[in-house]
Length: 319
Length: 319
Image 1: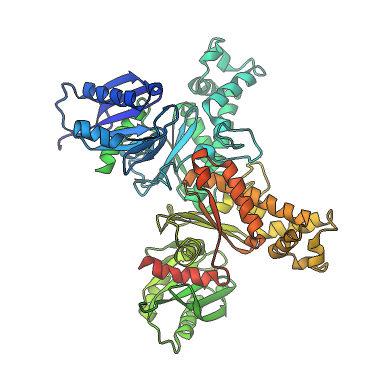
Image 2 (image 1 turned 180 degrees about the vertical axis):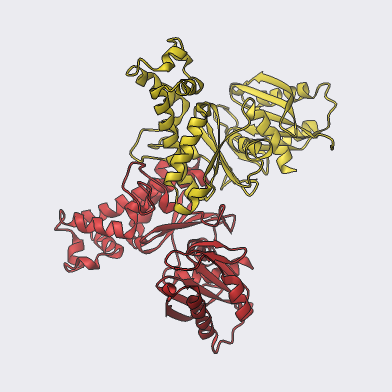
């Protein structure tokens, strides 16, 4: 066996900055987590990044091939510039690549966090054997990234893959983005949880209520999944309906992209196999006939610390 | 000025096979049109193709750089194989590239007709100065092709760009494809014309009726456009509604692709500037904020014989 390779992955967030040394199989061997001072502007965040990297590198004997950063906002990954990340006031344009490379003399790659998650699955996860796939992240928001022929498909500005803002009903519910009927407004975590809490009033016998011992704050996709496995009709219907709507939205994307492999991760993916089956079924039902037999939905493999792992994968993906 | 280059473009259709010699500026200098014997199987069509090319080449003194073929169906453009084109019984897989190259010793390129139309606009038309755009063809069907960084974005099988089957209402009208609420089921030519005829009963004063002199068979997008220019409220409403729905569908595609330039051609584009403005306005309204300022809708420049021109452009595009 050849010598194992290592990189540093940095998950730059508005709440936490997480980073770690990751081996080329996607295993984190050292981790640092810092509360993000995003509100204090770029200078402070850059200081935090440098301190964090120094902490990660302290006592490290492994050769580090590179540093990968997954960041929110508009990223020019060629130049390494991060533009106006949401929740990072005062940024405008910051050339993070240059700054980090100058400080540490280690090659640095930057991508937006959705694309980094897709690269993570490509290098370490469910996309290892796929040439092209659509990565969907189901969290508070519904995000995504496109891998096409083993490369990130970036579009004009690197923002491609925003599957959360495919509309399934152009006269539908208002979405945070300003449009109507976006799939995010139906299956985003907050919306979903709200809806479940509301609908549970009409379903007082649901196993969900027993599982959370009456504490509605404990309701999560995992709990709903558990209830569904106990054959709870309400829980099963919530998951089927979520999968159905998501499948319909993805069918539009699949017809446009002619990419039939879908990887789904994020918190709402805690709905489990029932969700994946429902998405696969309803997408198959709606796509053009020649595409139907190729539709395949996979659960994401990177779960905990997917952000660090995805960012670290940018290094191995480039090389 | 250097010597002008020439290619042969072939528009392989189920009703007509059209071909011509086209110069590198997109001008057809000789044309042949044959009634397609598609129903009689691939051997007969191949015979027609060879005869047609011989006719086009007769007395030709220009050097021909290559032959481009735009074909319906699933195309493996690398291998040059045409698979099961709709309305061409008995094809399964035919390596047209090999057959034509063997007969004429001229390099031959094959693409599906929607992608060829996009390449036509890229090389000769509205896409000449664009690196990436989404080509939309509004006819009986609503088709499309994607140009990304000056190349056809093909997806898994070359079928990418099927914008006609983006749903705008997942519980909406049934589409011929088997899904519900596809944009094609609202703005496809047949559907539109039917709807206009029906709605005219409630609008007996519409200028459309005067323009067609009461002959409802004469109703066409151009006539509706003419009526709209006469300030006919019904005609203006039809065009605005068409543009609105199309804009909403395209917003989904634009959010996924992060490609903000749209070129629109085909018969329904006869609605004219009113349609383009309406599409641009409603797409802008619905896409994610960072994309809004970049949205631009262009009318296609290739109109008559766009099929021949697009196919011929495959030669100049590859070289």
